[in-house]
Image 1 (cartoon, one colour):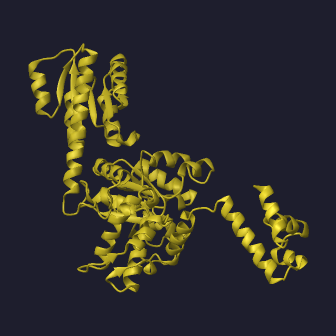
Image 2: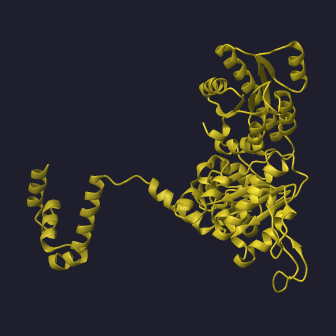
Image 3: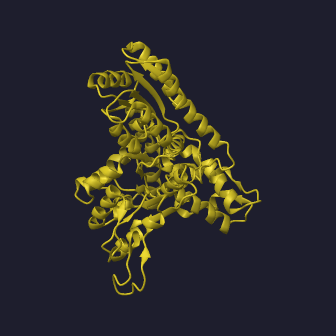
Length: 466
């Protein structure tokens, strides 16, 4: 199972032996386990990792388990928390339940009982997530801001979007060009608690290298020629919301270092200013490159890669989910030919399904828009499709034709030699030149097929070969 879809389990206890025992139980259930020896360390973990299940000791130094419970339920209302203590009382149990705890566990506990309790908590987490996912699917905008598909791979993407929409954790969205990485980023923003906050999309590949810093972080008046007044950067415009950095692999290394500082310190320094400005921004990034290979080759900062790669969401290429093409085609027909009933012929749909779509969903969208613009607006046939798709269909038809057998090839060779031999009226030298074979090969073939010799001799040769 993809790690990003597994239950995330956090154990908070100042006793290492208890943490290790609970982690062993969690691992046996297939959870992704993490440990914290104090409530303060656990809160730091919660802010970045968003656990699904938390098991927390009631009595700890400095911050108590109850105080931790209050904080967690405010930050992550859907996270299930169970409290445990060796000094249990009815009053503390009632208080914990009122604060939103799932259950109350007394130490020492039996391993089998703890396993059953964690399984029930995990099941509740999954049911809540699935119900939320289904409610979103049947909503009027069920296609998640344009993400369309019913294949297993795209459904996994939609589930991940549903799980990540409320987290402040950086998310790295990977996939080939045209797979819809910005659509996924927009879905995560506009489906979550930040929906009414700013969403700023930045194409790092289109920024002028000399102006990247001022675009992202802003500048002060007089910072450079033409800076007649101060201007906030894109990070400041996104304050309180989400900034989406597309094609992050295109950033120069100098800017990668400055972006890393922004992510770590949560503040930017405008060009020409000595003052830093605090920003509270969720960062989503996307790339069609293999960033791990990029940092190993020295083209991308390793520390920035690990800072961004907290959670990775990979978008499948269209060729990996061809079962979604019918649905996507209908979606684009509705968009480009509203209030019209446009039919796609069987031949055209077959060509669309056989094509590999190197440009992915964006290429399919352009293909349908082109067919609508250039066609008769009632039917899309194969001649309405781009030449590359038509050629792909023709190549597929040729490859599907049955191969010639050895007997078929011999018959074809014999008929060709007979036709040429008749044309040159038995001139063997000229026949060899026309056929492109040596004189010795021609004599062997003539003898093999009984061409150019008397009927009785030919019959004797053919009989001997059988």
